[in-house]
Image (cartoon, rainbow, N blue to C red; front, side, top):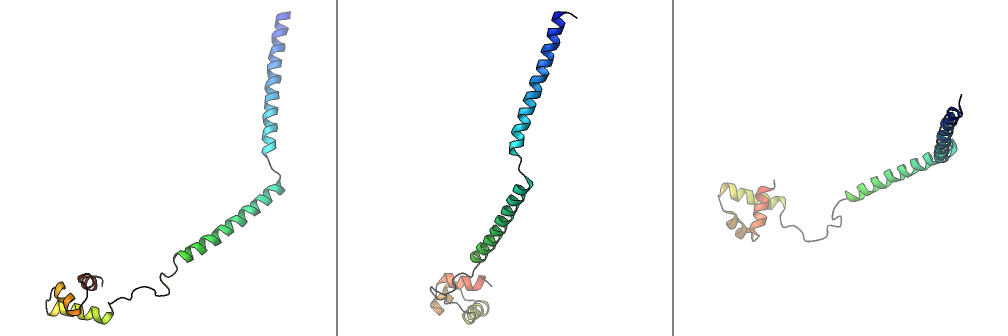
Amino acid sequence: MTKAELEEKLKQKDRIIEGLINEITNLNKQYKDIITRNEYNILLKQYNDLKQNYQTLFELYNNLKHKKHNERRAGRKSKLNDELITQIQKLKNENNMTIQEIAEHFNISVGLVHKALHTR
């Protein structure tokens, strides 16, 4: 073997060694990101606790969101009751009165008469 051949083999071995050093460096970086089983179990428990808290808060939010609107019955009372609606429908069907005439007869707005005729 000549000196040049030996130097070439030496360069190849140096490249292999550099590649192995880079691979070891990368493995060490990855190893730092790995956690122990105990740490994993602690994180998993914390995750499950947070998930349970989220579900509880989500259910509470939905219950409050769907809570009955206007529980105190505050606000203006409706002039329309079942008896009045029946009378309005009867006048419209039997006497063929217009919505305007029915509104004047009961002293209510045309909109209320329309609502009574078309909501049920």
